[in-house]
Image (tube, rainbow, N blue to C red):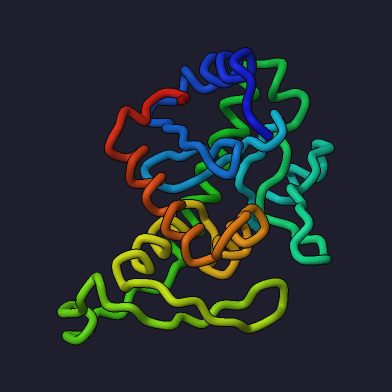
Length: 202
């Protein structure tokens, strides 16, 4: 699932006209962000854009297909569809479709319910270990994670336009060891990329 150097260069050229676009490594592929919200992803050297109810029919008419992965014995469809062929051949068309992805990611972020801010939450210890309930492939389970890591996971999920369950499911699908450890590594890698130069592909 690794991205080849040639394909990285190709992506840099495609997105050059769009200011503020940032790239982050994600499960061997790439997440594509604008203003902190994920509006695209790259998997197996295939580009996908974020869609919603407003834009999905337009992508379907253009012959695009949804991003689907196998999760614990069943297929899971995400709200990302392939960039139309016409977009990959015409810079102006590409910008149009990319902006549809950006707009969909903005609507998704705006629809997120505001975080509850209680005095207890504001005074919580980031190192406090708690059990958090999640649903993985339709099954309810719990994971033990510190408050600080859990808060960062929620931030990452929101930035990628995913529910916390969808993000944890992705990590669960890709992990080779303990799930809690895999989630901590995801957070640390995301923070590492944020602290570095994320304006280009790495």
